[in-house]
Image (cartoon, rainbow, N blue to C red; front, side):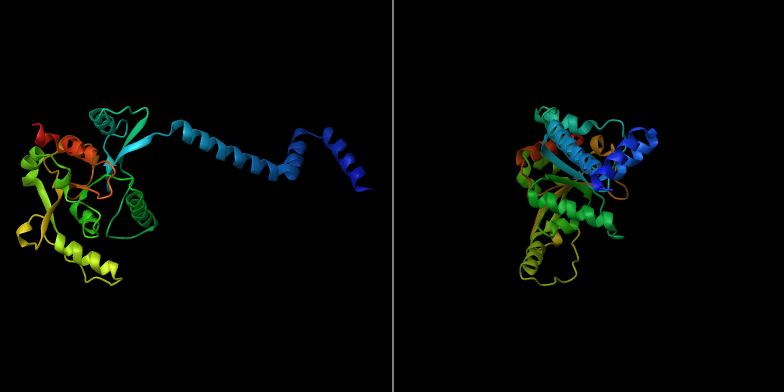
Length: 254
């Protein structure tokens, strides 16, 4: 029997077949088209949703190894946006609690988070870092974190100086030179951040937040005291100054 006649007979038989048989026939012959169409619809839908809901991020702070203590409402991004005077319907202030990095082990998730933060830095898409000092040391001595006083007003410096944490610029320079020459640096022994007098060329690299519970108590960052640092790549230095006002409000506005 010619192929076309056989096909016609098969189609006639399917017309009178039960619904289950019709569905099986349909998916046998058209499943490739269905899958392709479904994927296409998903991609189109995702793009529509992205562009319909997209808001430009104007400030991005990473709270490393943190968990929000109140999952029902995170008020701080909204409160800081109001302090900046920006419309949260158009712009996003991002308090990022998704990055977890530890020295104890390296699984795929930790590696992915390290890479994510590197991408943020390379793209200039991150402003500040809040974490325990041991988590910040590698970023300090790789030259990623800046002298925090560059972003402070004279009043902020005067009040917050007792809370400064220091790094040794001489050690930063030494390690950066080793990296530029593709050398393996010697094992790094970081100086005590509370003893600038023991450093060759100290500079203030962070602010201790131990007495700033108004914000930090709404995030769970266990084990050690939290500190604020500012990335050199920040695209928003003026917002960093205001963020210091916000995060250190317990000290600046008693």
